[in-house]
Length: 232
Image (cartoon, rainbow, N blue to C red; front, side, top):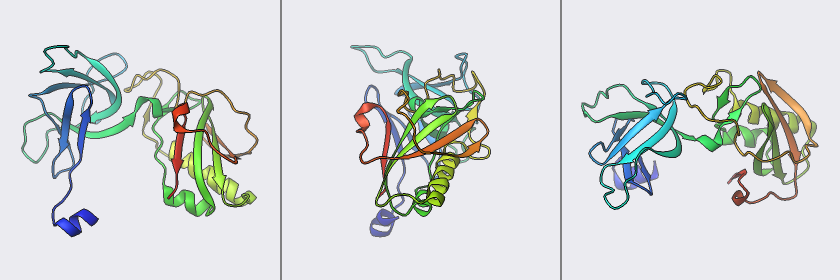
């Protein structure tokens, strides 16, 4: 919004990878058009079949100009959703969304795998003293939220915070898939780290999901492979 106000032009998103360079760019209709003359983009389901528009799957790339070292069907670790033909009129293949990373998926107890999306305003409202948080997958359907707070959490703040995290991981009709569904991602969840000894209060349960909140003096760095976020 600030760039649009200062420069008087809208901003459009881009999608790229270090191995092949630019992959797709966003059009005014909010879809990402693939640079088909430069790279072949496949979005595949669990069985390796192309996903239909609206189905989320794994992004696989083949570079068309890598003459010295051909890049053929490289697994990027990304998840995306193909789009139907775009009303903008461009004939290039399009993506409706770049959904996230395979490693960020959380497996629920019923086998569904979902991509967490957190509402930072809701987290701050639940616990105004929240400074940082880290999510650790303890097992299928079990997540520990390790938090750094300005002051000890009151019981109602702990419950509200657990509910906010749970809603971000698996909201009512969470986008995800059944076991072996579109994304075809092996079990491993968001962080793939071993249990750390939860001591928080078990909080709100959604189907196949339990979130516990544990206060911590400090959090391990993102380099450890765990999800780390700072409110700011």
